[in-house]
Image (tube, rainbow, N blue to C red; front, side, top):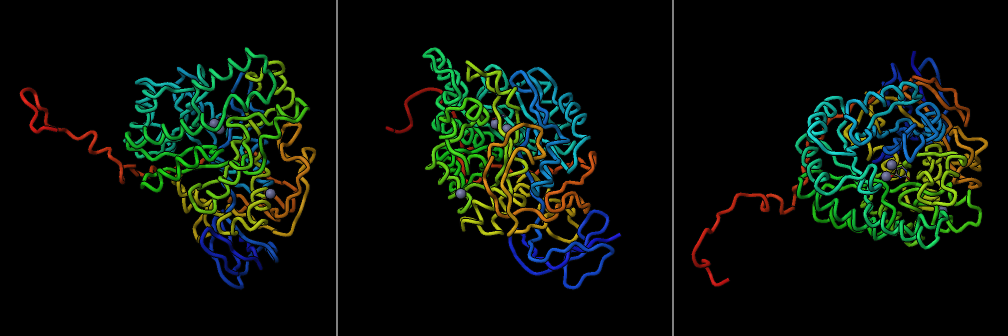
Length: 483
Ligand code: DUC
Ligand code: ZN
Ligand code: ZN
Ligand code: ZN
């Protein structure tokens, strides 16, 4: 049984060209002119692109006293509806819990996935058990380790733990990831705002200003440099952290930044909406920023200083959000976006001329596959690659509304926005899962994708070697020179 996608333009991160794509056994079998197959999908007027990879989701995650509302079933169904064919979720041990134990919990949940998936491993505490189990985690094909520099008293790790863990990740050939916000400052500002009677959702944003993110990003970059490990900074929301990443990259450091579609398209004005529900539904960390920060993120995607657009999909219902009525620090942090990431980025990126279609593919798929060590199995239109493909109709339009979404929650932060550019077909390993907005996918079809360690170090131009090299010690006597 073979399928041919006929009459479209193949668009990869590098090239655009007219060709048919033949699929057999879940993989791309041929790319060329006039291909013949058992089944034909009409791609006339459409672009054939690698399916999206969302490298940052939290499905059915225990968090702030509840669980995020989209699980691997509804979350991956939403992903496919929007042209995303793979998610990378975070296995999250609670402090004191073993990494392998947490991995087992995530394996139990992910069996329901409609599309392929992988995990990052979160390091939420430090000890010899964590140190030891990290190697087994890498052997399982999980090569990226996330650290929270915020959520003090819960998930946050201190600098000594960060440094120890970064060194271990570096020695294992993996990638360190950070949620970069200064958790001590956030805790202090939150307490003060509450004491002054600021209890509403807007105070959430006041408690996490851009400087909090910029400081932590700079610190993480320097610690990663000293530890000799490549660094991936999740949800870069502002110029303060983007500037640190730009500077690190210009100095030859292996540092990548990931903005979210939410921060690219929504701003802090959302928190001033007089409707409490409206504002609380948009509470996430980091919060939405003003438009100058948005412009910085778009510029980063254009210049290449930012690499990947994700969602941090962590959806909570209105009822869950309302546990924070009267105390903004209790509003579960998180927003959705899995179904909307690609149409929103196409509309506001390609549709406005900010991004080329090839840059769109790089930001939504190929760069994540390369950085995370799964290219060209994923993120490519090449013979032998998995047939995770989206046949993209640049003329198709819709208005986003919660009533029509796959996500399990009762609202959508992009409600009422019209997008132009939608999947005509989404294919997961060769199987058509979505046809013009109609999802017909199979729960449990998704498979775990094991990733290879990149074995990269982060010592290109750093002073790391000099700092740690053995040096002669002058034990006594007069200094050798006048200094
Ligand atoms: N930020 C969120 O908004 N939700 C989940 C975790 C995070 O860091
Ligand atoms: Zn985070
Ligand atoms: Zn996250
Ligand atoms: Zn716009």
